[in-house]
Length: 269
Ligand SMILES: [Mg+2]
Image (cartoon, rainbow, N blue to C red; front, side, top):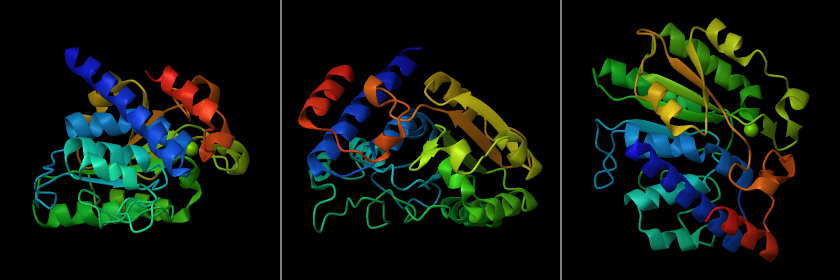
């Protein structure tokens, strides 16, 4: 329980950093970054076997942020864990910075260039397959957006992952029900999302994506079904943590005004 409280506080701290980075840079994707924070915190502070001092350790677990636009929380965590120095966060989105608006492998800890949606899971399939061929124990985790599920390449990856019985692969969907153009169900309806993934041969679990304990109950018990890849539908709220931006598609990449910024920081204190 103490552990969980520590992680919840960490998530609040990361949310503050996200808001600050976006406000200062006048750039970023605030809604989807805030919705995915608790998932990232559960993974990075409890689940992933990684070593910030040796980012390319061959036996490390792999994480791919397929929804590459939600990058601020990712950078904040990599800095907090020591993959990069915290002061580098101040360069976010500045000319010549390694902290670009979508992540690249130039940054220690980043496993794949992402941002062009729909590619992360295919890259993850390759890594998971390599792990099986090399008889490695590592696991591969891929965080996708729900709007991203409209990309056909995701379903090709889904098919091949079950074909190759990649039970070392975990796909996580940040199911906040919104994307840049509005609700996912109005842009490209996804439901029944769970049945779709089951039909593609995956073991599917649904969780509250803001409940760290619930997330850990799943993430610490992979594979859910031996021989099958795992798909976690994490139900989240876009903009989670700041009441006046929650569940609003316009906050996909809006930048807070001075007044809004002050209110956000107050809510996250
Ligand atoms: Mg979404």
